Image (cartoon, rainbow, N blue to C red; front, top):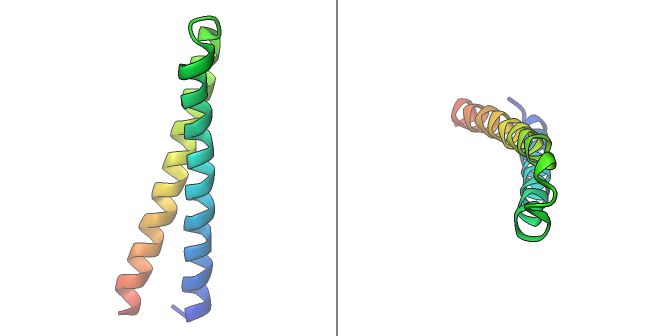
Length: 71
């Protein structure tokens, strides 16, 4: 794998981690500020947070595998 490809994977990991962190903050805000009134938002926000974290994990696994391969 070329250094450019590794940089692209690293960028993707950083982006997906940022998105996962933003979703986690939204979930935190729901818990801290809007519950119990906004209980009907729990499932949607929780699913979006799960999906964002899963996307980060998949990108991170791809990067780790590429780094091992390149070594």
